[in-house]
Image 1 (cartoon, helix red, strand yellow):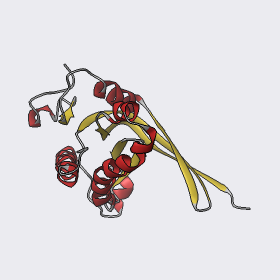
Image 2 (cartoon, helix red, strand yellow):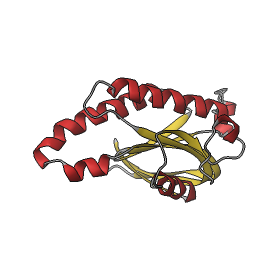
Image 3 (cartoon, one colour):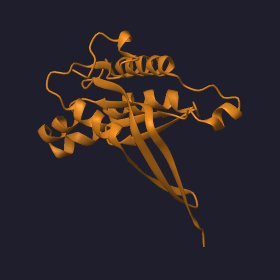
Image 4 (cartoon, one colour):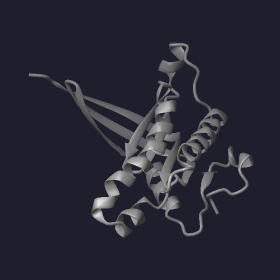
Length: 178
């Protein structure tokens, strides 16, 4: 019998990015059930394909939840000891801008291009991994997660990359904090 392994990660004041494909819920509500599977594949192509390109970077975790993902840098002492560079705020912004551009490029010719928002924030974030053999599942949570999901639901927020971090706002004309 294989023993369960439980790992806990995250912390307070974590820098993270929330990626969401806009309008997916509304899309599913409006389409006939037999149409959604094929179109969902096309939508996923841009989202998952773009995430796949950054997945190789073992300096961050990617936690996917439906049409959303959280990019969480591993800026820990362990990375420094292993001589891996940490992902700082500028590099996270660069990764997010490239991800946004990649998602648009991959799907611009499709009937359903990936119009997304990427929100960069700081706050408490945790994940708990329960692993048994080759199988595992994650539980994610924290104030930063809630803050991003709520900000994404705001009326009138355009597509693009945004932040509510005062130390990053100089890179963006439209902060989320307002």
